[in-house]
Length: 445
Ligand SMILES: *Cc1c(COP(=O)(O)O)cnc(C)c1O
Image 1 (tube, helix red, strand yellow):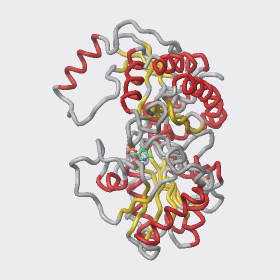
Image 2: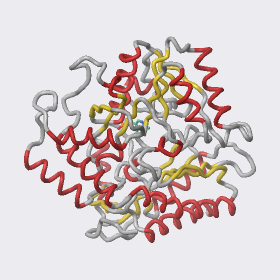
Image 3: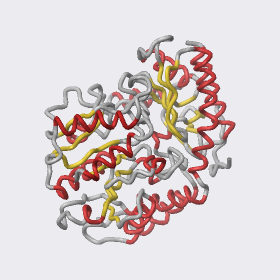
Image 4: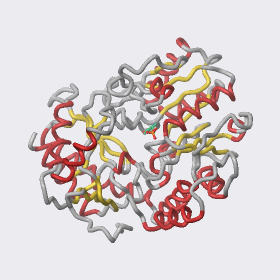
């Protein structure tokens, strides 16, 4: 595979302990100035990043297997994205699309209307963050259906704003002490093949969720079912085959909208443009952010024209939504994904990660489940011989990787999952080296 990043040497190199003295000095300044409520997984302070590496202020070069949480799929400074941003910023930084509009916003809408699942007529609105996109998808669904209730799932993550905290499942750290939360949110059981009864099918899991919706919410009250087609923060839980199609069919038959939160799983991450594509599921509304703009803050809601256009003029928007520099970055990012076939790159990454994880799982008995698709793969740690979550093991492995210059992230309701989200442009050798550090850390547990 080719990497578009050539200027920054693609290698792991440690010059100091992690974090080094310069990072530690910055960390002390930060502690005296930045809210302690904002935490960092690995407090090395970044000087440069690109391709598959992050270079810190002490000159350490780390392998990036996190992509800033699935954002820098095209790398942190793809030359085509950098050029598009430089060109846009030299023209104008902002006018506010709601005051005096510009072409790049429209072009992004055209692009995502074309790429998102389904051949129906679509419309798009742009926002700044994933949470904001989810909030707006719920606004649109409630407005278009005239109904209040929203169903979300166990292990779901939809953001940190007030409404999206209510939609998110896990209490700590996301919700603890931050209530009261928004009303008319109901939680249904998720299809979780590793923890569902043996042989439980996607159809059966969908029926379990549908039974909850009909008995505890009622279709006459239910505006939308909101789901991550592959869950992100909740542990990269991939529902059993047939679960999403069955939910989608039930929604359509009952006048309930299906909203796919593709904020983490979208834009080539799973080896398809969107995770819904694999089973041909066509949601009524899709939320996007993270990977779509090469690191610039941009988010979108795309949906059926009749739903998106139902809202009165002025009902949707925001000062910065669809910022022109972020839009230029998104257009260059999407073009890069197409030119370099990053869907194929994600599937290629899967072929490298899966055998490495399977081998170490076999050897150690520490990993109960390996799941995910493309460049969105996770290992769930358990006490050997059981399915009991082992968060301490996942934490220790992540810590060992960090100390050796490999950025990995944990996730999961039980905190026992290591997730791998490398940039889709990472070189094979670098990826293999990172995986070598990871698997050695698992063996050393
Ligand atoms: C990250 C994420 C969000 C929230 O996005 P922010 O940009 O952090 O507000 C929502 N949904 C999913 C699935 C996510 O992964």
